[in-house]
Amino acid sequence: MAFLLTVYWKDAQLELATSRMWINNEADAPAVLAALKLASNAQITQALLSTPVPLVAITNNDATNDNVETARTKALVKMRGADAGSSAAQFAFVHIGIPAPIGSLINARYGDVNNAELQSLKVKVLSETGVQMDKVEQISYSR
Image (cartoon, one colour):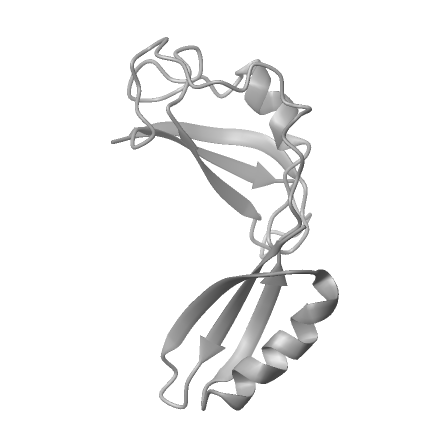
């Protein structure tokens, strides 16, 4: 099974870059990073290894023309984490783009924040800092 390795770089002028490559297994990641570093003057600031997820568990996973949306048209979903309890603390947010949204999700300029699919999704989504989302705050439309 192959894994997607994403490497984030920063050079001496603080310019940022990203490299992506497939590798054969997780155990190869440190050696690949070491080899990449030997070939570059930039600093590796972060590396992420994706784990492929089997898609067989998804039912009805076919593209449809139900409401004639394309993958370029997106529902932009903004979710918010729980109140941190301090007036100075900021809420954690997550933004998710959903391509070719279904009509019940968004059928005007803004979508239904009480949509059942998104309500079940929000309890499974975390922010970059690990905060669980507890509210679908806004759904907007993008083309």
